[in-house]
Length: 104
Image (cartoon, rainbow, N blue to C red; front, side, top):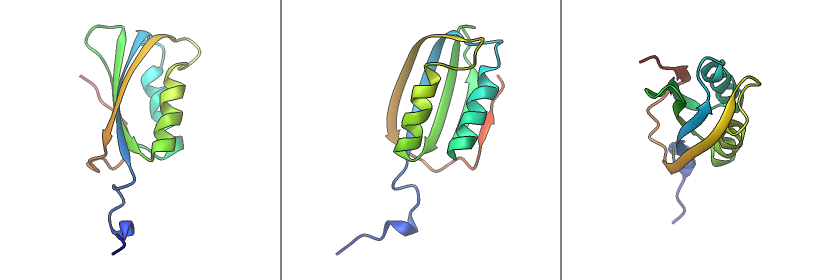
C-alpha cells in the first residue's frame, strides 16, 4: 500500500539546528540569515548566543534548501568572520509558520 505524503507536508522536511561561531554579532548576521531563510522558504528562528561570539538558529524546510542555508552560513554577510558552523539534522516538527529573529 502506497503512502500518500501529500497529506503530511512535514514528512519530507528536516530541521537544521546550528551554532555559528566567529565575529558574527554586531554585523547584521541575524538579519542576513532571516533574509536567506525567507528566500529559501524556510521557517524557524535565529538569535545571538550568550557568549557574544556565537549565533544560534533553527530552520525547517526541504533538505536541499537546508543544505544551501548551511553552506551560506560559512560565509555570512560581508562584515562577518565565520570560524565554525556546528550543525545537526533531525526530523522537522512543523511548529514554525515563518522565519523570525528572536531576541534574548
